[in-house]
Amino acid sequence: VPAEQALWDAVRIAAVGAWRSGGRHALVHGGVGYCQGPDERVPARALRSLPLPGVGVVVEDGSQIRLFLAYLDQPVGQDGGELILLGDEGERDCGFRDLTRASLLLADDLSLTDAVKATNRYYDEVERAEGGMPPQPDEAAFVQQAAFMGWFTGLLSAASAPDAAFDTGAVAGRRPTTSWPPTPGLLPELVLWQMRRGEEE
Image (cartoon, rainbow, N blue to C red; front, side):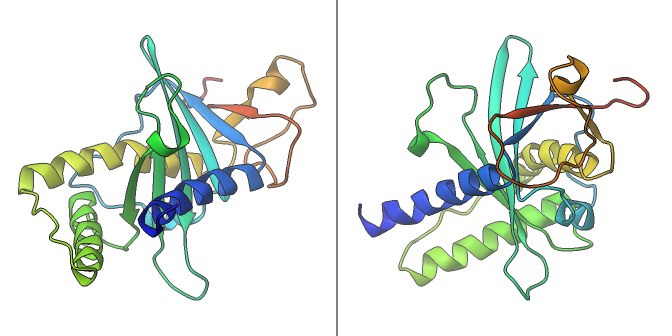
């Protein structure tokens, strides 16, 4: 494929690879209760301690089901890292190359909005270095993107805690009880985890 297409494919392959190498674990939740506001600080330390190299997120939002893959891109020997999200936007039969991509640089002590701006500046500089002319979003667009990312940073930050989720298969008696976080490793089937909500299971 052309080099430009290969670059986009590489991100998708990395997300799927991280998810599969983690054992194909997926979190299931109802889409509410974890969102962070645009002015809240990015939980960078918690996100860097996610228990898996990649995790799927199944969002049951009313009659719509949305699927996402989340993984951390953290180069060896470098601080920070980047949260990468790929999603199907609720589209049935979404193809591999139709998955949308969003990312957030995990800088400490930044609000979500400031982190979105830093991420935008980084990719703008890359595009300009390649001769492109990236569009300049306004403040409202930054806040909107921060609200979108806050939905994931809140959920994944909560998921980084021990026993944050329970294995639905174990509860149903399909396999022995296991605890979150799972040990990465290839598994014969997808494992679904339900996020806990306080004392509720």
